[in-house]
Image 1 (cartoon, chains in turn orange, red):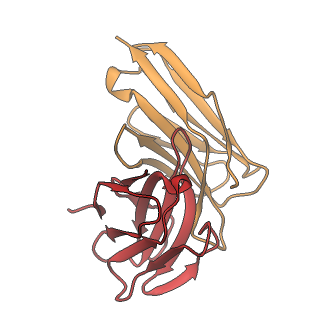
Image 2 (cartoon, helix red, strand yellow; image 1 turned 90 degrees about the vertical axis):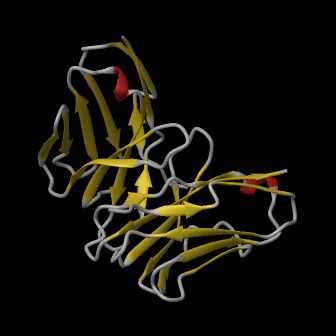
Length: 111
Length: 113
């Protein structure tokens, strides 16, 4: 099925470092969502973006909706061990409710 | 408040058996979605309900997959004559009338032996 291109595939960083990951698509989306998934659990919504160019923060997380509507990025500042997990981007088009997901970025944080 | 719940959390089925997976959405959410997540992949869309109406079933992989939401609340995903390739985590999500933000349940891990 169709998926977004998410990078990097995995990251191994030191506690306290900042993290950046991004997502690109060949299709335009009207909503971008970022989720975090822990092992054995469902994805948890972190940030939702609704307008091209929009920059939204949620604590140490910041995400942006690209101007072309075909990309988005997520930044995590001052990473902590509980940030460990798999981060997914997801795009939603206007004429259907379904989300198209990226392949995920696996984040590991070394204390 | 209560989130999306799914049952069972784990299901082992022998090839050829039928299975039924249940989803209880967040109270008041009109939209309900089913996704399939293979190991190491992102979720992939299966089907979408608005209230009791199934508006999109384009992601169902075969006619062995069937979903229903008869009263616009609880939904059941049924897989008939399970095959090994059906092994995956099945996720349910719900959203309010706007439908922009989808909230996921913990998933049901189906293993077909």
